[in-house]
Amino acid sequence: MRVHAKIAIINAQDRFHGTPLIDAKRENHDECRKVLEGELSKLRRQILGGELTGRIEEMEKQKAASVAEEDYLTAAEIKRSITELVDQREALERAAEEEEEEEEKALY
Picture: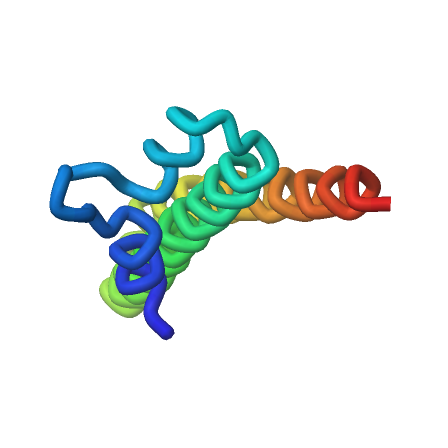
């Protein structure tokens, strides 16, 4: 299932414009609230990670075009930008893994 579709399901509104998360908070269902917030957080990270991957791929094409045109200075600048994006994506992945580990510890 697509990430945006999953988010739409979690954020579905009832006839009173409430969402599962709003209802869980209002009714003090802390465990349910934590699950919903955790899933939303994971899905948002997946979206961000996908966007970063798309930008990295596009910049790789730009870098290849610069090299083909023998514009090595531009290619080097693009490579630096790619490295920064890769670092951001890896930091995002590490944060997701750490959060999952904490959730697993909390369950046991």
